[in-house]
Image: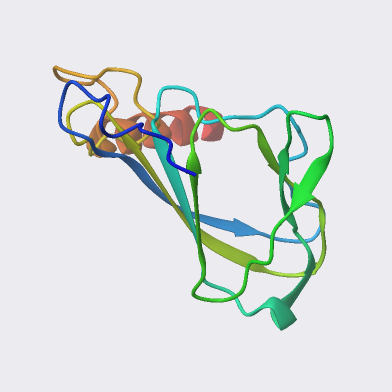
Length: 142
């Protein structure tokens, strides 16, 4: 199946965010209509061996309303259009580690969140986010 997402891009397609997700028992992405708003393509790379956890199944909501599950072993990459509805079932044991990369038509970002600004400076730099966290921690200690 050809998505033609990249061929329709009018600007360079670059990383929007690169995130390391660690999920422990009880953790999930439970919303079947979740999607990666603002991005073009999402790539999930499994870093854990499937014997290291139970649950944590990656699923997509299909047009007919069914949920589709995917085999997702250590070293595998799932690549999908970011507007595809997807979720992850609850983890019941172990730890599940996944590297998530989202690509978009914007400048490459180094800010500390999923930026919505395609161009220009972002006030959420890693340094500013750390500074805000430190201030919040100090305020809670007073």
